[in-house]
Image (cartoon, rainbow, N blue to C red; front, side, top):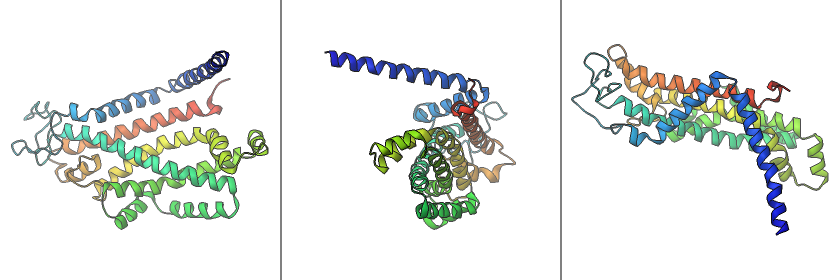
Length: 304
């Protein structure tokens, strides 16, 4: 019984410390109004994506030949049956944008997960072992960085074939060097500190030192980079979709929607404007949120 009580008491300070750290993080984060606004908008987009099947009034691929290029509800000739209007084949624009949020968030999450996981692994190896391992890894990253990101992504998709999955793989490769370089620099600054040396002298293995000792202290800048890369992934996926190398019709992906609508831009402004605004506001909100995360997680930005 005494052992159980002592164990429970030992967990209480840890819980209290976590709550204090969370409160401290939020107090710094909310000082940036743009970051808070971005967070609220991303939460709204996330809710739309999760509830797309319930919120959207129509199936995103359902066509109505009697409502081709229907204007928005508030414009002359519009109807509340199609709040944001319809496209060239009579599909409800609002339903397609809502379902497109699901695709965009999925693309961002998958790309960041792939790129961040591989980047952390390679960066740990380069920063910890140095020498030839570092030289090989960093020269490969330099080659990737030598190409314009969108051009490299286009080339990779051209090799793999135009498809949403291939576009995500290509974007993940393009974003990989940023995580590798950031992880490597963070590991190099941490590996010679006293707590790492103490763990090494205590007999910790190389894997344990990298994963359990060094990596947790490198996560703050990586979290910020992941947030900013999330918006880059959405933007690049939309660009590839617009060029016909990403999501293929009739997938309700925002970039592909722009590509399908570009020939109607002069006589049906809504088919281009609303998907473009969705991309703009989502990317802007994520970038604003990333700035707030950077300020909240950077010790140099915190007041004593």
